[in-house]
Image (tube, rainbow, N blue to C red; front, side, top):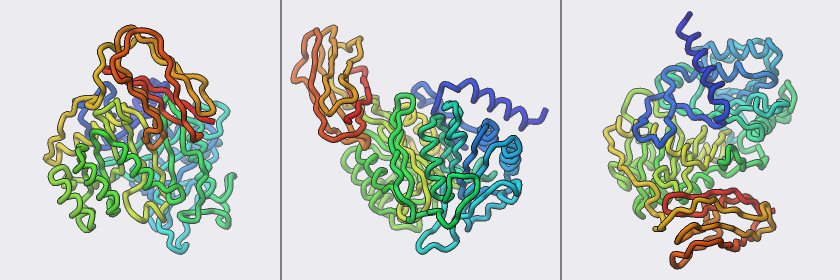
Amino acid sequence: MTRRFILLLIIAFSLHANAQNKIKYYFTQPVNTSVSKGVNAQYLNNTMGDTIIAYINRSKYTLDIAVYNYTSTFPGIAVAVNNAHNRGVKVRWIYDVNSSNTGVPLLNTAINRLASPPDAGNYTIMHNKFMAIDANSPNPADAIVWTGSSNWNAQQFNDDYNNAVVIQDQALARAYRAHFNMMWGDTGIAPNSSLSKFGQYKTDLGAHSFVIEGKVVELYFSPSDGTNAKIQNAMNSANTDMYFGMSTFTLTSNASLLVSKHNSGTYVLGINDPSITTSFTYSMLTSGMGSNFKVHTAAGLYHHKFLIVDPSNSCSDPQVVTGSHNWSFSADTKNDENTLIIHDKTAANVFYQAFHANFVLLGGSPASIADCPTSIPLAVVPVEEPTVFPNPSNGNFTIKHHLNSTQKIRIEVCNLIGQIVFSYESDDNISAGEYTWPCSISTSGMYVLRVKTEEEIFTKLITVD
């Protein structure tokens, strides 16, 4: 039995065993689980490509792949895709016309593929690295999205620093498929280049907010969706600490914002690939952040594109921003990119485990920050969760909470970019009993309600119709 076959068996078993975990995170280089808060980051030791194959092997109906560069250094992916085609899966493949893509000719000639336009005004590259599996399956559990920073080749899988996010959710998979269809120019198996739209010629298809396992997940495609503004919103929402790992970083507005947050008391650390040394942002970050900013000097490309917000403060809005989007003008205004913003303390800690290992490797020493450093002092944590009704509503909610003993309570309602739109804090400790608090929100949309105590934060999603 070969090593690769054994690895595939292990991966397949792991995927089955973790079927109830709908969001998974993978890293190509070692992580530091000593800073884990309960869920360890998964280091795929030379098995990122095999993991992609394991997901491709699960496809039953459709397989939509949009990858900037797939090379023949990892032929197993082409074998898996050809096998999917042979068992009746409808396969479609989009790739960047200016990249080598030496693996694409390994595909069965009957598989339809489409190159990005070679010359379309100021359009630059199709830089996505995603696949949508079985988006329209009659069984919603079949639908899967794979995305992240890694191109599909042996160096990116094994030597370089990359991450991948895999999400089992039909609504999200359909959103990715809808965007794929816009580039494909058709909803069917054959592309229509006369109707296909890439780069700045695309339109915003909406469908930006999803709730997956109780977590708010935002999805944005570049350049139609104003992605960098959403990234900056995430930066601005940081209350305690923030970490970034980037391949290409040329946007001075982002560098200025990071330095400003650093100067105002937020603990900010960052790592960038050496390519930044030719950009003006390099001098901004080195002078503004000092030793808190590191240029990657270890072997392999530092190919990540992530931001981690408040992983040390679960009383805030911990989140991860990741995908294919570098912090550059082209990524925001010309390239085809995709970005996820995941509001979840577990996701933030998992990515922090990877960042911590990377930063220490470069000689850094990340500070240890106590959880909920800005939480309000309370005497006793209530044992019952609050209720909110009606939900959805026209904007007027009632929050009901039973307190078993004297408490001080803070209530916050935040929109999906982390801005507080409603807040209430009791002036003094209030005695045990049952209380109701009114809450009013004027703008329709989805919001995060938080009822804060010293040791707990109760979170609920509410909707204003």
